[in-house]
Image 1 (cartoon, protein in one colour):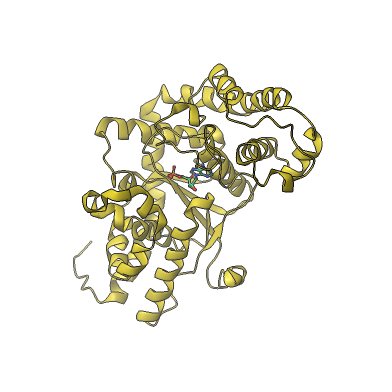
Image 2: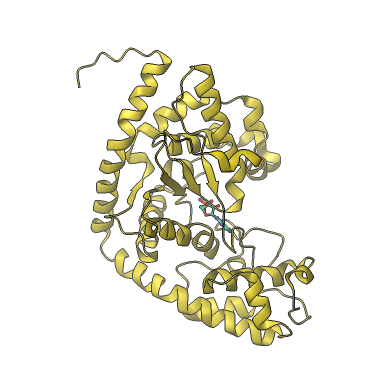
Length: 348
Ligand code: AMP
């Protein structure tokens, strides 16, 4: 992405947007790849908007009551991890209808061919593509609408969202070209840090995911200290000790994954971790990693549990965040209606 460094265009002030689906409990992958980085962006003082994307979640079946609970739990995780709802905007997507309105318009901008190339769709649909929802196919176009409803310029995500953000750039460029405007920014993916792709604890070639059938494959943000410890100690590895260079981990995906997790949790680079643990057996490294993971995650889990005691307060925070989000998105999407040629004559 040679041109990625040239944006944002001077006309667009920096604004961060990102989202997480409330389609299950959050994992260590979500924490290291997304949440932790969301907090860092908030601390940098940039305007930050974070969203529980419930409309994306229902592209696959969700039990209604569980969906509501998972949305609250996600919001609690954001706050427990350090998102301050006074400084960042935190809300759930369905409360701000601008997203789906712009999503429809983007469905008319995006091309079938672009969407058909989305690897996440192909992975999720598998052999069953005749029988998945139309929403799952249109998913990346709604994601572009999430971002561009705010003219966000930077989007922190894990590595798996790179292709979706490229599509968001294509949609912005095509919209601007088709309507001969300079309306939407071409967004910058922000995919950085040691753990942009946390892998399964059972299989170092698979992404850690809330939808993996094996609970042993992931660390959930709701796991207690004992469970975290056990899962790390049982994580799949190989019999070799840790080498003294990252290069030597090239064909050892499980070992590399644990080194990356350690680095991201400790706030070090993987190179530093390898230097510290060169020659160590997993019998030494795993307990150290387990202790570190517990030290970092347990306070978040405890705070999440505390926040979940007062669900009305979480709903209030999401509502107040949605009001602030709406105040930004509404005028932007109203301008889009004008640009595309819709009559807007209702008195409001
Ligand atoms: P999702 O849970 O699919 O809604 O993802 C929410 C955010 O977490 C996105 O930015 C993802 O890229 C990120 N994420 C999810 N799983 C992982 C993982 N295993 N490693 C790193 N980032 C992840």
